[in-house]
Figure 1 (cartoon, one colour):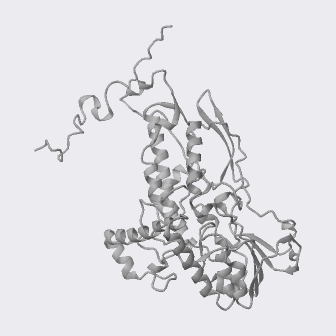
Figure 2 (figure 1 turned 45 degrees about the horizontal axis):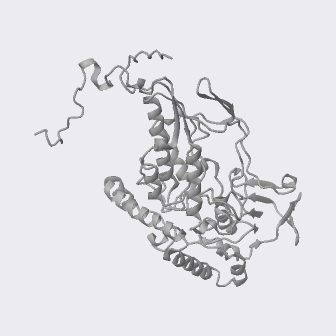
Figure 3 (figure 1 turned 45 degrees about the vertical axis):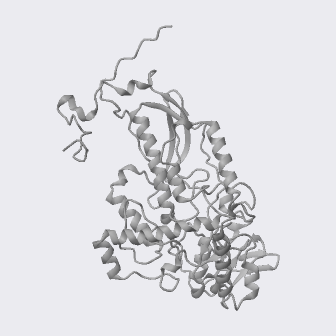
Length: 482
């Protein structure tokens, strides 16, 4: 059968053929949602930045939610990102249309969002104030109240430490022990705790970007060293474990019974290491205690366990987000033209998630640009590539503390099972893995019968029909330019 060649395209080579729009939930993400007392970043502020937008004016070594949210909004406004973001929008359905090679997306504006409440009997029978750490009511006056905090993850630890001095009574309901660490890079602070930067320091970093770069570089070097403490056979793991155990013991020297309850048997790092200035100290103050009895139900007046019922004015669910939730919108098996910033095994165990996410975003953008320039119709990862990568990831993760027996987000809230929440390697390893797009791992189709039709009319945009720069490759730094 004779196939009639398609006519040449009239535009220059690699001219983009489609426009794209980004739909987002809200500017700020977790820092928009989490406004509970004590909400703050637990890694150094100068590491928690967008790689393209430094901030020499961070007020403290670890900054709070309000300052981070303001930084994110300021950055979004500076780069005029508002026109690319659709706020207060929930995706209700996504259906792939093979004929047009496009996703049909149904959106609901100002719709109800996924709730992350814990599955506890009678939760909404409580007649007092019920709050979730991710949906805090800042109009509520909690000082002087009898409060319960359910959970001892990052938000629970910050809440207990912040609220204990200001409430009448506080009970922290705990399901499993956890490692309470010193602050990440506490050795970079004067006394191992948070501190305020001086105006002189901030002025130096504003006027001398290289000084700020060197300071941030030193922090990054130290943060990335934490990865080796997560590897079972690395000497750093034993040192790391011993150091944290000694620090917890020092904080609980006057509370030996509490130390026995809260000190884990699993390796440090199996569950996310959580810095907690003041948390352990708060638990053995007269107005605060820990409770390990499983919650049977929530009553109208408080919380009932096997030990009895205790009354509260306020119950706070510091139970994190529902990691078992699956999207309720319709998806198809092979997911063509579908990319995610945080898919399976996405996160780095050390350092700033913003750096890792920026590389993921850059990787996706390189594919988007390639699809546009090369007129690619569909792109889908090969099934065998997924299987091979998953096999590699799980084999590597067996060599880490993350596979230990502890209930963790890393294993979708389970105590045992596959690690799906962490990347199998270091931060630099992640960067290197994404340096190339890896086209050999994808199935592609083109919008034209001839995949090279994107080469167009034999010219490029800079030619401008002979009136443009006809030697863009020629540089004054060329060895032949003298």
